Length: 379
Ligand SMILES: *Cc1c(COP(=O)(O)O)cnc(C)c1O
Image (cartoon, rainbow, N blue to C red; front, top):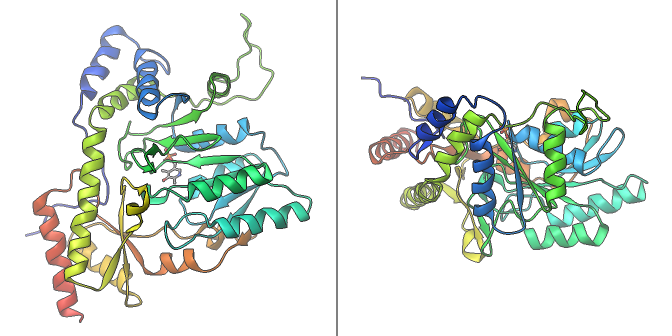
C-alpha cells in the first residue's frame, strides 16, 4: 500500500480564517485594502511590539523590493547579501539594476559571518563602492548574530535589511525577529510558519516609511484627484481576502511555533539514537531562540543526504537539500563573494526534513522507521 505524502512544510489552517474571509465577502470588500488588511497589520504590529509599523504586501519578495527602494538602492549600487539563503533574498537587488555582493556563513547560526561581512564592506569601500545595504537572513528560523552584524552596520553606516521571512516567532535574547533591521520583511507564503497562501509584509521603524511603502505598493499615486505619478509604482498590496487568512493564522501562531520546535526535538532524539547526523542547531541555549521553521540534519557520511532524500521520496516523504548558496548559482556566477566554505559544506551535507506544524505522531513514526530501515540496508 502506498502511504499518503508527508510534506516538508505545508499550510496549516485552524484559526478563524474562514470567519474573516466570510466577513469580507458579506461586506463586498474584495479589494487590496479593507478591514482584514488593516486588522492583519494591527495584529502584526501588536505581536512585534511598540515602535514597529507593518504594511501587508502580496509577497515577501515584494517586501524586499520595496525595502531596497526605501533604502535608496538604484542602478549601479551594490548591496551585500547573505549567500546561504533562498534566491528571493537577492533577486530584488537585480530588479533595481543594482549588484549583489555575497557573504558567507559562520557555522553557529549558518547566517551571515560578521568577519566576512566586515572584510566585504572594507573591500567595497576601498574600491569606491560603499554598499547601500546589508541583507541578513534568519535562515530556517535561526536568528543571525544580531549584535555583531548590527555593530558592523553602525560602524560603517550601512543599514540592515532584516530578512525575517522564515523567522516569525523566533527571538534573539527575548526580542522578536523582524524588529532588528532598519527595515525588516516577513513572508506568508504557503510553506512558511503561518501563511496567507501567498503574502508578505514590510516592517518599518516609523509611520513615514510605512506610508511610503504603501504608496509604492499601490502604483505611486500622487495625492491629487486625477491620476498623477511622480515615481514608478508597483501593485504589491495584500488582498483583503488573503489578509483574512492572516488574521486567522495569527490566532494559532504560538501553537505553530511550539509544534515546529517539537519537531526539532523529535529529530534530535532520533539522531542521538542513530548517530549518523547532527541536527541543526544547539545554539538556541545562548539566547538564539529559533522557531525551527525547518529542521535540518547534517550527515556525517558524504552523499548520505542525497541518497536518503531519494529513498524518502520513494516512500512519499518529502525532504530537500539545504539552499544552494547564491554565489554558486549560475545566475549569480559573476558576483563577488567574501567568505569561506562553511555555506558550501552545509549545502553539501544538509537535508531539510518534514517539519510542518501538522506533522502527526503517526507520520513521525513513518519517517523514523524509514530512516532506520535505510541505514540498516546501507550501514
Ligand atoms: C520565502 C522567503 C522569501 C520570499 O518570500 P515570498 O513570500 O515567497 O515572496 C524571502 N526570503 C527568504 C529567506 C524566504 O524563505
